[in-house]
Length: 288
Image 1 (spheres, helix red, strand yellow):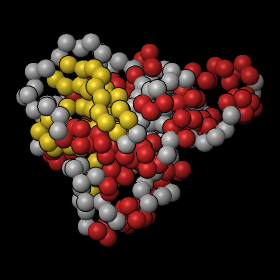
Image 2 (cartoon, one colour; image 1 turned 120 degrees about the vertical axis):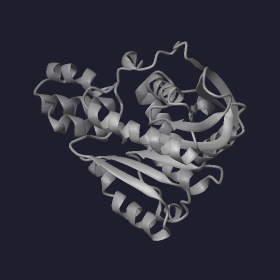
Image 3 (tube, helix red, strand yellow; image 1 turned 180 degrees about the horizontal axis):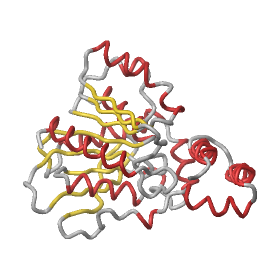
Image 4 (tube, one colour; image 1 turned 60 degrees about the horizontal axis):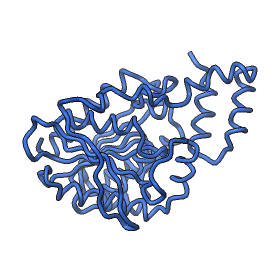
């Protein structure tokens, strides 16, 4: 089992402003040498070559790029749906992590499509030319993205999904990490949204939490103190306004436990259980 200090360090690196050279130096100190750190690095970083739970060319799906108008111009999105499903089906906005719209998130969108939804995965970095292949650069660009502009992109995505030719007009969202935080904000700010799922995302502010009016499902990693410290206040806010919600904690798991391209943090049992709960929740709330 990997030393949890390595996982905690990687979490600090990917969610802060630590330069890569500093991260590698600290990882080498924990591992005992630069060579040992180099061995650990592929286990800590995402391997998008493994992001093919559902093949991009799966014949059961119609998938590809579309676009809609956002607050600062066109927003590219990956859209997927079952070919054999009804012509119209509930839509689900799939919101990416702080690495942008990458092959893993496109794969999650295809999973949602196979579950019977119209999956729409926007690229929040469309305004700067789209998600770059370099993860460090993608994280930098996400960090530089104006908070309200980002929210505006996803508010527009909900409207786009509600009016899509293959949509019933019912729209939910599911977000991971940075996207989990955005999912919570959509639940508080989008009048067209019907349900939201949060995967280990930072809870919205107290002001926004008080405005949540749609059912919410939340998944948190048991060892994710960085996020979990703020969850009790979110829980209390949702209780105070009487909104329907489900909150699940997965013991002995780390932040990003659902990301199956990350060997160090992926937890198959928690990932499968949380996804089953997510699909059942969205199907119930959206009428799939």
